[in-house]
Image (cartoon, rainbow, N blue to C red; front, side, top):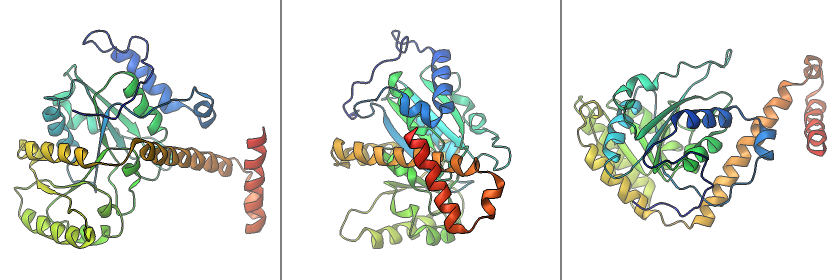
Length: 310
């Protein structure tokens, strides 16, 4: 397995032979998840690119992403010594709480010492991901993981930020997704490296496969057409073919590491800025929203400028 070259600073106690200090890792992940924007900006600069190969799994709700990830992780363990699974669940817009139920669908992996599963609430993120996700992924690098499988919130047609954080992106669909394919044409359908039709034993799976291939052939133009793989995740069927497609997609990535680093830095600063902007607006007194729109806009800019100067 090839990964991008990097030399992260190993966390104390991160590696002890084949052992993993799961408690220390959990605490490090909690600190990363709870860090504020100022904490992140004040932390020591992390040089280099990530070590672990990152596989993003996205798709609409009900596509069977968690079941697919469990089956895929079991297969990937044959070549990767340590696999992290990061599953993002939607947060309530009122309470910011989340069910975090993905672990239930992956219970067959919980006792495997080579696997670490972390469920995250999306919190303020609205792009299918979670706040502080780059910092969370970096923790797994520090702890010597070979691969990270990232499951996004069930997404629609426009949540494709995951593309900026992973090496290989999978879009999971199911039979009966013809209308979803049409809706996704101008968004997330254009970003994936591999297209997975799950629940392949159900009627209509072959039709979705054909529609996907036809759509991807049109959108690819003169470029290569991404693969479409039919699987039945609950039975582990055709997971080996999906695994091979992931390896091929990773090998085809020819972007240089410098361009990739810059792209991810752009995504990271955008996420931090939007969090800071949202908090600035949230902290405004209620009377501020009675002002004319240009004045309200100027107030927000002034508050941001003042905070930056401080």
